[in-house]
Length: 119
Image (tube, rainbow, N blue to C red; front, side, top):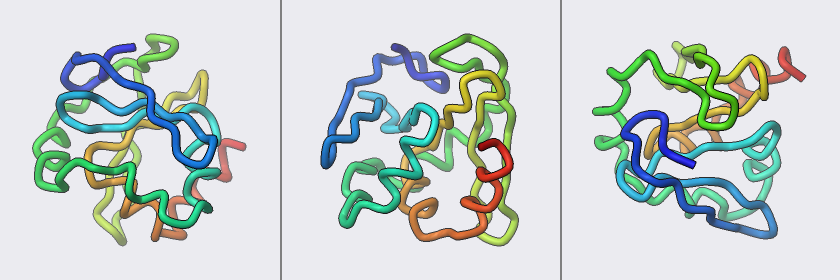
């Protein structure tokens, strides 16, 4: 799988038996349907978000990306309260978080409410 933002290879990483894909370059992360929610509940899981937030912010300008699983255009979602933006796939329901965003995601309850709309 290739990163939808920088096109580098995504490597699989596992934390507490949950496997996600992380870009070897920009450190953005792909979560298949519900993986982010599962990992969000695991203590210490923010450690997998090893990229720098400022690196992730530099990739926020890339808006038109395709899902790395099913190649459909992804939708930009934003949480104005936390100033967090991320991409979602309407077909496979995966999400892509830039470097540093999983840490924000893990501690943000409003995104959980947003994602429940897709469940």
